[in-house]
Image (tube, rainbow, N blue to C red; front, side, top):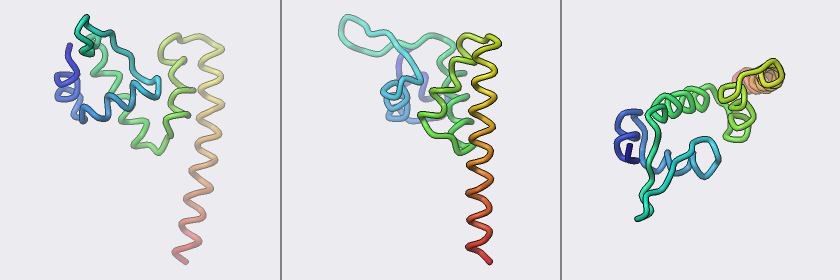
Length: 103
C-alpha cells in the first residue's frame, strides 16, 4: 500500500513514516518510479511504534526491542526484557526528579 494510505490508516503523518524508515523501524519497497510501497502489516507496526513512543521510549531503544517482535526467540525476548528493565529504571528516576522539582 502507498505511504498516504498507511499514514491515514495508522493515524500518523507521512513525515512520521519517513522518519520511522530513516531510523530503521519500518521498511518499504520502492516502485520503479521511486514511490514507497508498504506491506499490509505496516499499519500494525506503525501503531506499535506509536505506543512505544507514547510510553517514552527513544528511537534507539525501540530499535533494540524490535528483534523480539520480528524474530521472537529466547535470546531476543531476554534482551528485550533486560532493555525494558533499564528503561523502567530510567523513567522511574526521571519521575522522581520531576516530583522533587515540584516539591
